[in-house]
Image 1 (cartoon, rainbow, N blue to C red):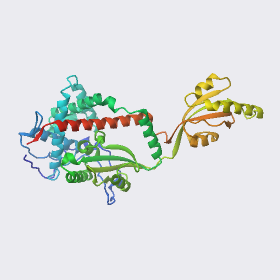
Image 2 (spheres, rainbow, N blue to C red; image 1 turned 90 degrees about the vertical axis):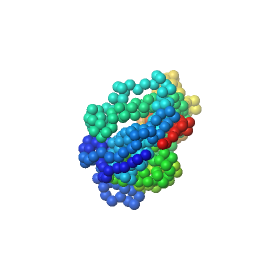
Image 3 (tube, rainbow, N blue to C red; image 1 turned 135 degrees about the vertical axis):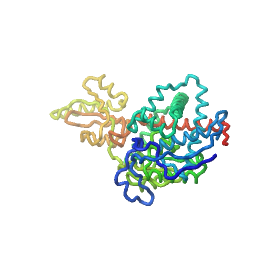
Length: 446
């Protein structure tokens, strides 16, 4: 394979809004960074310049089972990667771009062959148009202008359309095939919620991640060298999100590398050490880990929350402040007799079935906002327990503590945690599916 480049080449879509697909780094990020970090340049449209002048042999460069990959296919994919990531190709990084493009094409050929086994799995032109429109909207332009930019850089519209068609069909295939296996049990969600609650008081970091998998790029040293080239490009202006989408092997790549909020102590030690040294808006240098290399971008930080949220239900006997001592004693006796029979599941039903009792689901509340008489029970009683009678100006109450978490109103809900766990399972099954296809395939590089 023959490869040559011109010198000092900029991104494809000169002067367009595509470069703004990642949020600009804060002004503070432009200051001199600590030894462990580099400050990324703000994302801005590149200055007009020529497209990369590189050549590839026109013949077959690889075969994947009975499908071929030509030099033309490889050049088209390299142009797409350059355009979408806005990495400026140089003599040093073109081999890494070429390797990334070739591996992506091999995986795509395997996916197409698998998709072909399901004749009913069809992605329409309209669906591809919607995907293109969404991509264009993300960077502040129209679908027509977006495609014009790409054509101007030598990318055939049909090449990108077929890539998007394959990606959409693959998502449908993976989702349909593994939907049931990716589901999570109630106990798994509740365990994740408990872990979230337990760690909510620790410092948290909103990070972006790029992961270069060593086996995909020719070994750990190649991954390290490639990661350093990407860091250099992002410092010079390539948007983090765009680079992540094209180069990262992490499941978060589809979200532009958005790894969400990371709790202190829940990531590998090398990543934790780097995260703690980064300021908001700074980009880490390459971080070697077993199997590959990470690049971390610090988007935001926050201290842990100490807010305690509790879910309460109650049953009460009305007894105003003027009630006699005898009335208070009678209500107390009645509630103490009833208490051993009550649970979170039946307390409201019992309240409606007996005269003189009132029941209420108090929902989830911040402990600090509860009546002072309720706060000790809400903060310390065992979940699932029912309190002894509590006197307030309204009467005597039994409180059932039906749930507790540390966090706040913005802490993840059951549904959010369930969705996150299911998506993680689906991503893991998809990666395993791809590895199995590759292991069974006959792949020859020319």
